[in-house]
Picture 1: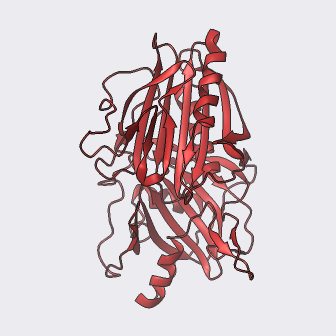
Picture 2: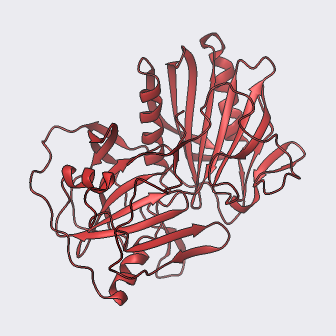
Length: 380
């Protein structure tokens, strides 16, 4: 499956985005005094963070939809620079976002070092940001990356600069994290790092069997699974007190490479245990980009469901009697397994408007997943 578009790379560049303006037509960002925010996400950031200041804002992709928003900062001499991403993926999980960001950084900078992820504070709340620090990024830069979650929104923060100015990089990152403000309906969520180790066991050789499509009433119920927040949902206890349910994504995976055509992606495998939550448990995840594009295998009580997540959407694919093999997953992604890649229920997430579930006829031709997908990778 080809990734058709790329986002603005996190390097010093000009002219990538429209100049920040609260009056810009269709611009999801709004500037008010010394802050810039995305009102629909109830998120705002300082326009100045230590030695860097806001210079540009706009949308990285999905123009006009307000689900892939980016703001860029620079120091007076352009040597230190930062990027803030506010985006709305179908699977909003900060831990997976941190793993995907790390994979992208290492792919773009083979000699980079560091990258140990730790939990830190943001927006005045402890335990709400995942932070990793790197050396030797691209042409030897010092760099930091943070991943956060607010409601269903994900936030990515990057700051880079010359190694001799590491202190400035760190100060700018800390100022951006400390300066995040949220609305009461979408506070920063508690986050946890995901442990990833190399896979030792060989992949399963036997293919799983795709189950027949259920009646429309049952497939609608399956479609609701795709609407749940895989990063953890709000629930109420018997006393009516609001509590956060645990995310279906586990806290540890092993990782292996999955080759799909000319591309190589990180395939994460988790131990298969019975589903314990209403939306199941993730047992496989293929990280297709650092912008939230993920193929997930979710263990439900009645089988293993494939979900294809992207910016602003989740597609419910087939239900299997076992975990699909790596080869099956690759065939679904490259489109050669047309029945496995056929969309059963398309779901669209619209900020401020809710969720849209569609029930197409169950026997249309398979959708070519290598074309027409409005996805991207930041290539940071």
